[in-house]
Amino acid sequence: MNRKRPRASQGFTLVELVITAAIMSIIALAIGVVIVDSQSSWNVMYDRVNSDVVTDGYVARKKFDAVLRQASREKLVLGDAGGSVEVYYYADGSSAVVDRYARFYTSDGDLNFEYGQLEPRVTLGVETICANVSACTFQQAGRSIQMILALNNGIQTNTVVSSAVAQNQ
Image (cartoon, rainbow, N blue to C red):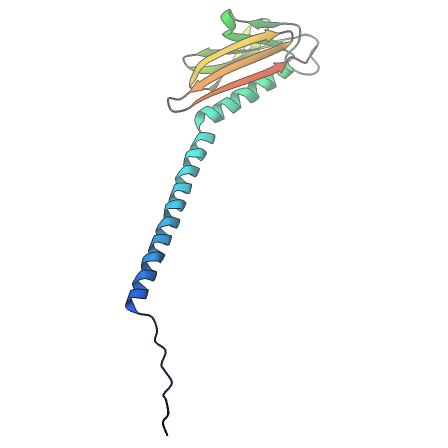
């Protein structure tokens, strides 16, 4: 009787293993390159969005809008060539007359906000709203005041344009 022995499993040859390892290495390298590139792109975008010129521009716009919306429509004073704007407002809701002032102006590359008592004129405080100001102009159209603020920190520039209407009588 002639019995044939079952053939044993052959397995993989050394050549097949080397080729598979090479293919897997190329795929892993490609995935690594994509991940590293995505991470560096994300870091660049994050830095742009959260840079000081972006956040300073946002803060300046919010402060400008808040102050102008509380201002009286009676009087808005623009400085020389639109370099500053001064508005008047009520100290509180029970005031019968406009008794406070607020002024936005630039000085040494900063946008400043000065506020105080109107009569007699007493400055109560000065705040620096943002730095890195390369240009700032104010324009008036009726009761509306527009601020055009250009910020530049040497790496990134940002231009903020904000308009607000004085709403109080």
